[in-house]
Length: 293
Image 1 (cartoon, rainbow, N blue to C red):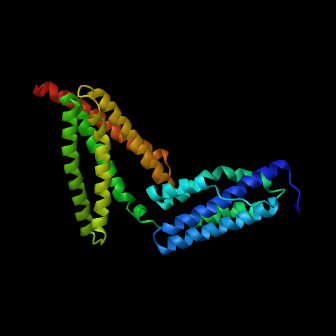
Image 2 (image 1 turned 120 degrees about the vertical axis):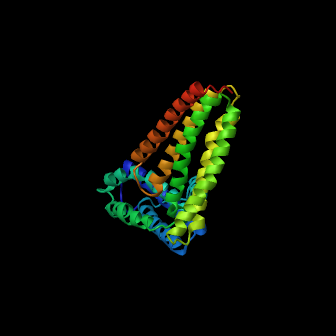
Image 3 (image 1 turned 90 degrees about the vertical axis):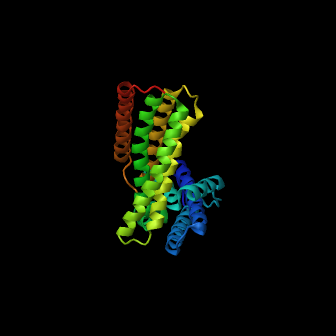
């Protein structure tokens, strides 16, 4: 090699070289199916920059490397399911720990300072330029999911004690949930139309789909468990609520670069509080109305 590096430096450089070539290929392959010409340009530009970083590291190691195909497949799959914005931001988020390693290299490899600056500033700016349709309708999805979580969590908790039968609770929950899905979607459509928006149908579709998926997930424990295991079903339903909130909050925190903890705690506290209050209402209704199913 034209320059001599310490063993530790070489180890870090090879690791970064491998990451750069892998990420370059990930950007290229996601760009192939990403919608929107501007999005494709941004992704290809990112791929080009990662390739340039790879060449810098290759000049240090004088070793040719191939991309990690398993990692490429992983992020392509994530991009297909959750969207390319989430996939590439998740990938970059996973590389944040590598920033400290650039500081370790700065004395032996001056180029690392430039690469670090580009990784922190330029690539972050490029990622913010991505404009994916599904992220434009995050508000509609949050509306549908939030309403379903609060309304159906409360309804199912109340039904659970009032009926003490998982099948009856599931039936009641599905009737309420599906009816509310159409109601919520229709309300979102009319609201968007009244605002003069041309995307009213698409907006209400995102709201309705988010609501319906939430309904199905919350009712599922009551369908899978025995009719007498209504309390277990209730606990499972609450666990599903927490998982949905955690998953969606994490998705938003990555895709839109927002905080996770505040959003998660706010949604979780509201949903669980409504469930507890509704459970109490179910107990009182059963006691004072004298209904025994």
